[in-house]
Image 1 (tube, rainbow, N blue to C red):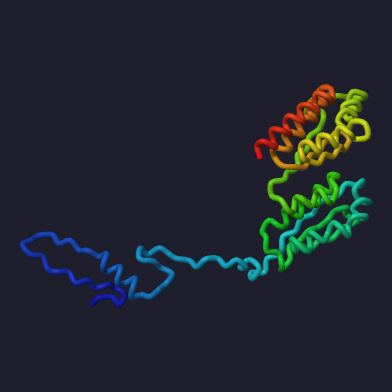
Image 2 (cartoon, rainbow, N blue to C red; image 1 turned 45 degrees about the vertical axis):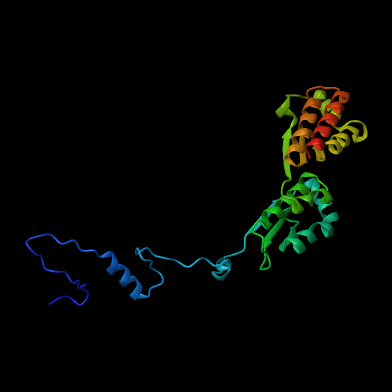
Length: 242
């Protein structure tokens, strides 16, 4: 007697001692179709339903958070511009934001209304740009455009300078009343922050290269007149390109 789970196949008897080839693919197809199980395909591989977009929230996972440290010298400007700083994060990126004065940091957290998966990173870049010394009006461009970056380097990365030589290099970059720095910003369409021996540049990829080449030339000792001429030619090439 056969077991209840045994499959019964109609095997024709052998004739004249010849071997008989049995094709079971048709039987497997019929079994798969008659079974009615939607989790198995014809070949017997499991099929899983697609993950729902809000599955993680249904599981009760905690929302992601970020903590951006603020330097001590930027805490007072942060308090002054706080009514202007948080609306873009709350109204456009739908993030929860708070200023932790005791920890000297700005804390960001996703909310139920957050739909953009990169909103938390954009908000973090925006706050970090302000912490580096950029104005809110300049840093807010990081939220509106995707091809903006921040490049940071030190003067000693270009040339090792100490004492008065370092001070003169910083003076050459800034110029009288900031004239040289403004000329580089206008010609390359970037924003530059001089924080002692550190230099922060905000702009597009090609514009960052133009501004950085001009600053490196000033650090190495090139006269400002030559740098201005190179900036004008680079700006002209950029206009022709676009």
